[in-house]
Length: 283
Image (cartoon, rainbow, N blue to C red):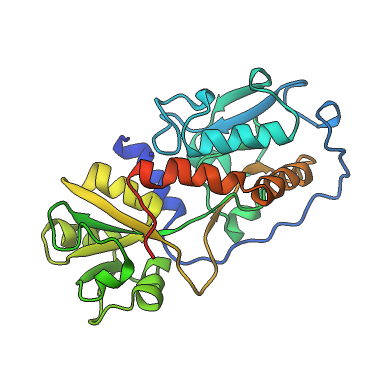
């Protein structure tokens, strides 16, 4: 949830990115829609309307301006728009609160992009595109700490790691990092964060969106040591949100698939969520 960074809106990233949940598979609408710009069913004819929250935070957006094409999700949105045949002047943005985006009801956007994790419960009320980002795990440490400069996962073998119970992060600690001693497991994420703040653990493992929030708003002088892919379990993915039964879904799915195939999504991810954002890849 997930964005520098004011506390309230950054917290939305946490909503989408905490305990383990099965990824939903939403059926494509039965309506057959040709994926040419002129034949798309749009909120505003001739314009692609994209929703997101305000403020719009880094690294997902930049300068609180979704329309500038900078930041991971702004870049993804414009890339999808391009695949659908729209140029920059044909895209307009609507402000949509995070939880409103996936609430039941009619939508004033063609799709919404706001770090919304695909879940079965949400998929009852809205349609999701295919995932455009698979959430990775991240390691957070206090600057100057023993493990703050780690360049690989093997360097964390002897670290005392804090993590929340029942999360994909805990699975990742056990299955990927495999520390020599059991991690400190906390019932609430804030307790794990406080353990890092109070130097009761050497490092904290959370999903990457949460890591941006922790370092920006919760633990002073902390840093993201790096990010890594977890294994096992159902991966958590962000999806573009559309009104339930949207005729646009097959075309948006096709656009996302094309961006994956061409490597464009990977390039955008590296540009905005990689080393430039302070989250180098750890292996």
